[in-house]
Amino acid sequence: MLEGATGEAESADRALAALDVGAIEEAAELAARARADHEVMVAWETDLPTLPVWLETTDAMIRAVEQIVSAVRSGDADAASQAAEAFGALGDDAATADRALRIALSEGGSAMTAAPLERLAAALGSIEDARAAAEAIVMEPAQ
Image 1: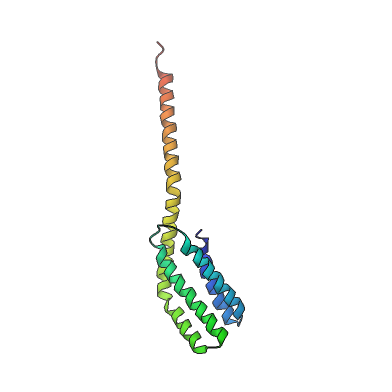
Image 2: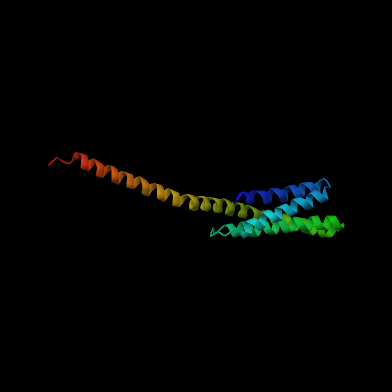
């Protein structure tokens, strides 16, 4: 599920790159893809406490990219410039958001593997108990 986490940032970056070469419709499609990927992540029900930090920042970044695309489409250079400045201002937040995402991925991985590892440990304990019981029976003197 977290695969979208890298997809939305990549799509937003590619949208900006498309704008740089004048591919406005491609940029719009990529911004829409980033938004769709983001909505999937927002809908994901999780108790990872750091994920909302990343979601809020990426939402702001995608919104800025969408505003840039819209302004470029309409030929509004001032609005495009303002949206680009808003996007650029998110640089510090983006670094924090990336750290939050790494923490969320780590927490999520730990949560997903904890239960199976606990079951494996319990199963190994049961095997050891059964082995010890069988050994005790074998070692018991015949009467």
